[in-house]
Image 1: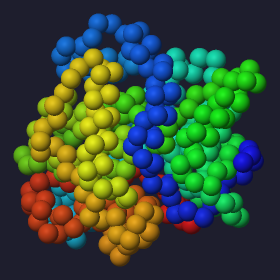
Image 2 (image 1 turned 90 degrees about the horizontal axis):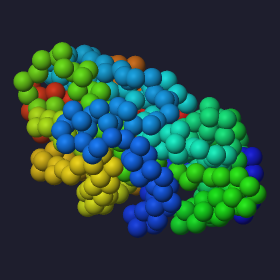
Image 3 (image 1 turned 90 degrees about the vertical axis):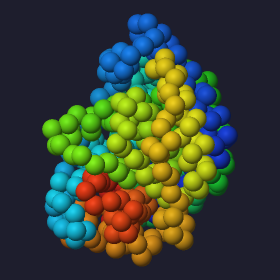
Length: 376
């Protein structure tokens, strides 16, 4: 193994997440300073307004241009026989930072000023085409910090997509042979940096930690404000990718705190099974709620995870996902990535066409980014 100034191609997207227990081991290291940040706040919140106020005051580094657009999709709605205002696109793909994507909201909390005190290097991991690693490298560049990405696989050239952008943002690449080696290798790199007199912060895969999930608690409040002037009597169905589950957990906690009984969160898996989504999401919700000084019980009908659109496997195209990609491009000029959002959109189209989402209900496709993998 060695650090080199090039990363690895050869994968359509980020690798599937490691085992839940293995990821939690790394999360522990990355959460050492969380309680310190919590203690900087006032008394534990007791009301919803207290919680939202605390969240707004929480230390974070601004990467996202807020609010991200919430767009009507009238042409797509027409193809589905729906009213123009009933099909919406929440465009976190257009966050205005590092070619966009959902990881930026989580990194705002993971890379907050208190956590970066004396830090000289940001370390993370991912597959050769990792969206998370791209945004972490971009964040490190903006912060003036060194960045090391631990990537599994063999190098392939020329570098394209996220693999090219990892290098463009100045990240150094530590190559390992398997996903299982990534977490211990991040710890090894951190120890090397510490021994050289520096200080490293380790960001787990996808920044999917209780702290990172707070970014999507805020996002739930953000979209609720955006649709507050759009009167709608039915249920709102939000389709969003669910893999490492930080985004899904943050939204679930946010809408629970907001007491949004008319919201359904359809978590569309690109890889893991439904029971894994439920288990990991519950863990992250508990951790994020603890950070906010509260306890919650999510409504039983809020979260609806599905593994029905994985197709042949992670990162592999499916006919349904390809059809969704073409339809969104030709009706709304919106680009989907093949790993995550194409399969999420495929689920949305299927549920609308089959009537599982009743006519008159509102549908939101939460676009979590991934543009670089759409063009390789």
